[in-house]
Amino acid sequence: MKSTDELKVNLTWLIFFRISIPLLCFVELFSFWSDFIIFYSNNELIKTDIVNAYTDSNSLSLFDLYNFLKIKFDLSASYLLYVRSIIIVYCISLLLVILGLLTKMSTIFCIFFQLLITKSYPEIQSGYDYFTTLCFFYIFISQLI
Amino acid sequence: MTLKSNWYSQNKKYIIIGVIFLYFFYIVLGAFDSTLQSQAESYGKKYVQPRVINWLLNNKITSRLNRYTGLEVGYGYFAPNVRAKFFLDIIVDSNIISPRFNTFEGKMKYENQLGEIFSNFYDNDTTSEISTLKKKVDNLKIVNIVEYALKTNQIKKFYRIRVLGYCLDNNSLKDYRNGLVEKKLILKKIDLK
Image 1 (cartoon, each protein chain N blue to C red):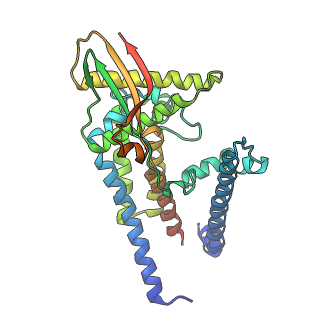
Image 2: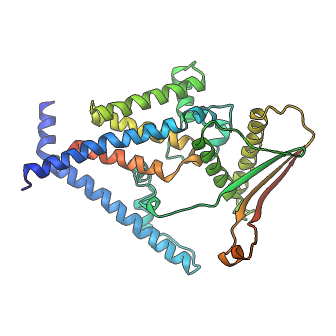
Image 3: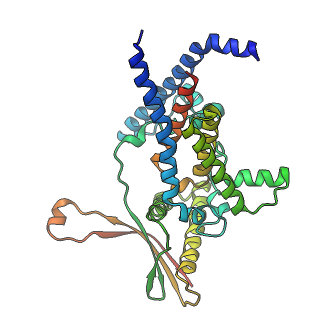
């Protein structure tokens, strides 16, 4: 049996882990905030349909989801507005994980939106993105215990 | 609801152990597979993935599971990996321009993207349909980048545009001491009129 002090240390580590990973995501997001739209909008650097020309069928991209919403729910918002809304929802779920509110649900949202954003532009994906997905999964597992 | 939560609280321990066991099983399996692959490649042989491993790793459910748990690339990213730096010179008449970004991170991501685009040009397979299609798409991407560079540099009139994609062929330490300058390894030349 572990002593209560040992359990306390582990709990502090889990809280630190739960807060630091979303904070890292915020740092990454805001480090290229003013360039974000250049990469993800439809008429700036590279057109979205060209970027998504040979993406993996296992992953859902922003463009796929936009087309799905447009066909199924007759979405009238522009692509740019839709991308901005996704970013806002992602930021809210990161904030919820930091605050520890609805952590299980918001961690799942974080994984979903993080993958949705990174897999939409696989060419600018780095090892860091895999690391954050992995960490979010660990945060989710730690919430089950 | 109570029945459900009771069942979960009673079996919570086993569920978590099961999930963690499955997770580590896939880590070990992925590591085993990539070791076999690199071993075969180092001897110049083609690696044929055993049918069981192929089914376990590449079926639809597990590949999605690997993606959403971050296991997709295993733990390979912890290894030091310094990739070559790629450049794209857009020569408008006689001036060299490049796309403008507001942040350093944006510029880094653009260079990363160039690396990904140019890596397809190393592929000398001209018979494969996918390879040819990828090259066509990559050409379109370069044209898009040129358009963006012209837009950000506010160039509206020009006579001729040449695009030169290259990476630096690094010298050995001996060459470096003898004062040899890094050579440009040309990967792509496009002439747009």
